[in-house]
Length: 230
Image 1: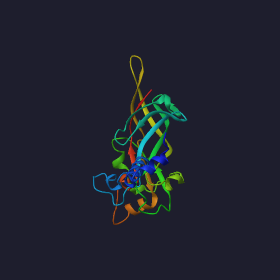
Image 2: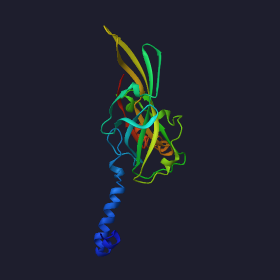
Image 3: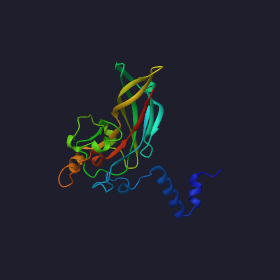
């Protein structure tokens, strides 16, 4: 059997170049940032978004690699059995608090337009899926949340990093007769994740841009539409 070096010697230069390009495209699938980033009203964002949240994975308990559900920007519905939560607490019979571990897969699709001298943050405001994106206001930015790992700041174009976070929910419970079956009628919690380059967001919320929605100022965001079950 001929070695790859021997095969390449027999190929013309154009064929070798084509092979190299094919390998490069396979290893580094980089979307066009200008086509990956729009504001909520459909208009282009002033700066290209740095990141794309490729998917979010929900883990069983604290076993972070034991995944039971995955969402994507195109499919945000997810069923969250409370038996898989790593934290569960009932202050009274009519409320339950649960927390899940989440792995966010974040891909860099553009270099920073504004130097990330203040680092990056992951914000996850509490709300409901139907309203959270439109209520996520820049008037409270920057939020008091810890910065995400420095690896995200150094992430090369086209590469993906994993950021581990939590999804916490406060749930109301009703018990239906005749078997006192629990029904989870209402909840609030983490249904939005948004990554910010702090300096870029500060620029976008200031004059002359005056961005009022946090999702428009973020480098990437994803809305989750969960259903909580026993």
